[in-house]
Amino acid sequence: MSVAELSMNEATRSMGSVDNALRILMLVGETKSVRVVDVADHLGVSRSTSHRLLDALNRRGFVMRDAAHIYRIGPAFTHTGLASERMPRWQPKVRLHMRELVSHTGKTCHLAVLEGNSVRIIDGMSSEQFPRVGSRVGMLLPAHSTAAGKAILGEMSAEAVRALYPFGLPGATPSSPTEPVKMLALRRELATAHHRGYAINVGETEVGVTAVGAPLHDESGRTIAAIALAAPTTRLPSGELHDLTTRLKKAVNVIEKEIAIRHDDSV
Image (tube, rainbow, N blue to C red; front, side, top):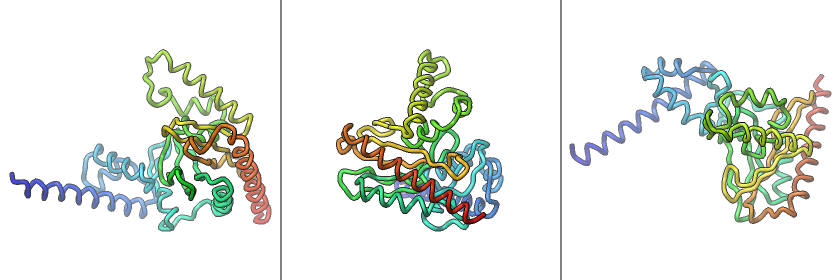
C-alpha cells in the first residue's frame, strides 16, 4: 500500500471518529442522558469503542458522567452558551466575584463542582500577570489532589468520602501496604481544610503550581461547589498564602449571603 493510500485511510478513520462524536452529542442533546450501551447501539459500534468516544468527550467537558455512569450534556456547552439547559442560578453571581478576585489578587480563578471522586471545572478566569496558570474550564481533575476538590471533600463525612474510593485512592493498588496510610493522611488533611475553611494544593496536580480552594454553600448549607485561586509557585510564596486565603474566604462569604438573599426574595 502506498503512502498516499495510508494517508487516505488515516484521514478516513479520523473523519469517522469525528462523525461518531458529533452523532453522540446530537443523541445526548435529544435524549438528555445516555449510557455506553445506548451509544453503542445508536452508532452500531462495540461497547469498548462507545466507551472510548464518551471518555474523550467527557475529558473535554462536552459530556459529563455521574456515579451511575450515565452521561449528560457537559459544562463546555454551558460555558460557551451552546447548551439549552440553564446554568445553575447562582453561577452568574459567582462569576462577578471571580472577576474581582482575579483583579485584586492577580491569580487565576476557577469554579469547580464534584463529579464522582473528581471535580469538574465549570468556569474560570485567567490572570493577566505572567507567568500564570491557564484556564482549566471543562477539565475533570482528581478531587483528592486539587485545592477545590479537597475543599469540597472536607465538607463531607468520613463515610461519604470513603464511599467515593471503594478501591483506594487513584494510582494505588489494593495490595499496596501504604494505601491505608495515604487514606488516613487524606482524612487528616480534609479535617484541617474543614476547620480552617480552605484547602491547599502545592504541586499535586501540576508541578510548579500552587492553589487554594474554599467550599461554597447554598442557602441550606449544602456544599454546591468550590472556588480556587491558582498561580505558579514562584509567584505565590508561603508568606502570601494567609492574605490570599483571607480574601478568598471573604469573597465566598459574600457570595453565600447573596445566594441566600436571592433565595429569600424568590420564596
